[in-house]
Amino acid sequence: MALPWRHCWRWASGSTSTSLLETICCFNGSSSTSLLRGTGTATGSGNEGLSSRTVHTTSLGNSILTRQESRLLYSTPKPCYCKRIHSDAKLKDPFTLAQKDLNHLYDDIKKELFVSKSELKSICDYYFDGKGKAFRPMIVVLMARACNSHSSRDGDLLPGQRSIAMISEMIHTASLVHDDVIDCSDKRRGKTTVNEVWGERKAILAGDFILSAASVALARIGNNTVMSVLSQVTEDLVRGEFMQLGSKENEKERFKHYLDKTFKKTASLIANSCKAVSILVNSDPEVHEIAFQYGRNVGIAFQLVDDVLDFTACASQLGKPSATDLKLGLATGPVLFACQQFPELHGMIMRRFSSSGDVARAWQYVQESEGVDQTNYLAQHYCQEAIRQISLLRPSLERDALIRLTQMVLTRDK
Image 1 (cartoon, rainbow, N blue to C red):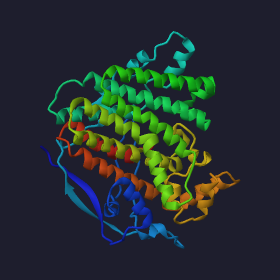
Image 2: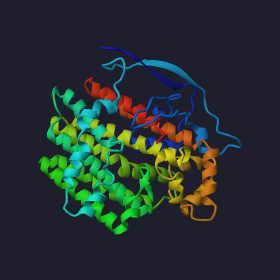
Image 3: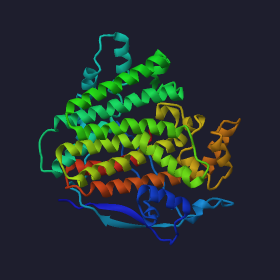
């Protein structure tokens, strides 16, 4: 078994935590000292699903909460090297490792959505064209195999585990269809949205139909616990959408509100899908919790990076317009962190950037602040916790691929 070195950083300064950081750490169930340790520059190679970028991280200390006349001051990180055991000297590419189990994913989904009415079929098949990243099903099948190896079960995935991977993509796509209606979006994945092509009413009905087909597939698995776990996802999606419609006056509550909303809208699906596949193969609640916490932390990190890309990536990379969140009146991580340097943003947040010039000024404040770097660093913190959780499972190729996936989440550029 190979023992490759893992490069990490430990901060040399003795900076202490602050009220905002304590709020973030408390929400994540971690100590403030762990959040004050970061990693340096993270780089990684991409693939057809997640391409790469360079992530520059900064220390979060007392200076984050005080407005400086110039830029924030950060301590200089010193590199150290820590051994971490992996089953291979080179971690396997997650997409390559999961490909065999995902070969028929979209064909299977289209079978679930088979209807005689041609227009409804066309709408439902619109996003299931095989051009998506299949990020969530990929995590689910890797987690399933990692849990199977941990439970000394070799061979093919259980039929129920394969179904959960399919269901996760169906729920995700249905939520995108509904989101585009709510946000009046006209672009998704580089193509015109369903609501723009067929209208809002038919888009809503199509999203509902995809969710109902996913529910039928879930019922066929025949496990009441799995049904309960995955039913929570739909509730979280709705609650998260309602949370997104509001904000908090209090600064500390606002960040907790943001992270809670992020879990419900993005991470809950990944976390509960990972938990569901673990339930089918292992009765140990500790294994279920490991799977859930990995999905939760990777899911939140994924969305944090997505919020960063809204400020750093161009529309052609994203497949949708940039600065979308600001135009929708949403204050994401980069804006909330930028508030520490530019208190003028507080008023804009409360009026949801609705006054003339708000979007442009808020964009400029974020560019001049450390909001992007600090959001990237917070994403790293969640990925570090995901690695800690998944490392509790028995070594396997799939477990190690899930470890590598955290780097790909941090370095993606679309």
